[in-house]
Length: 235
Image 1 (cartoon, one colour):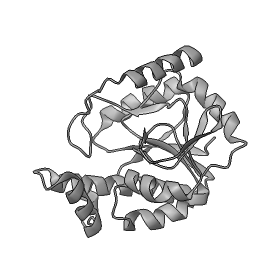
Image 2: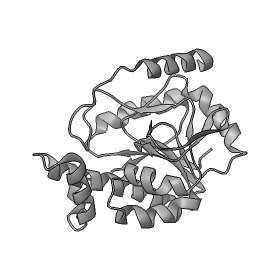
Image 3: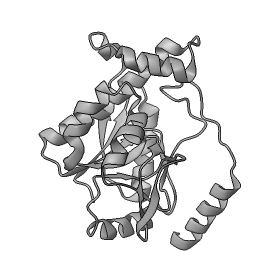
Image 4: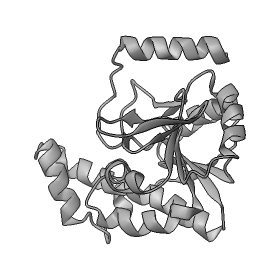
């Protein structure tokens, strides 16, 4: 389904890498650790003014603004570094995971189905999980694959070589965080899809490297029943 998989992980977050190894083993994914680019690595590559202005408009100039700005930029640079490596290695596709990615218990079974279905689909981009945004398309391509045009979050996704160059050229100049660039600029113009059911979520009760606070679990009945049905079907 993909030629290689990488987990982006900061050197100081050994705990996350150890946790991710257990997650990967549980769903049968073989992945290499990719050292994340940290804020201190970017002294000579500061965030562009357009990104700073965007975050000011979205979040305001709070006490943690500078840290969030640099962390957002470092996050993008880490993802782009993975894509550069994939391009250099001549990989036809690469799976990119962040180290706070948590898989559903039924993921292994669904991944087997996805691999079969993607053989007949020419998708440039596949999310294993993400937040569907209003105004975006969502249409069925196969049993477990849906075409999408607006999705946020970038914690678990596959990219094909058909869009490596485009992402590497456009994303740093977009003035947007990486997941916003994907959602608002890239996805409407490529063949993008998401797995159904979704397989990967960002881990809650763990401090975000960008936000600097722990994500709090929010209970939603629709999501609860959707996940419960998927567990019954695939577990």
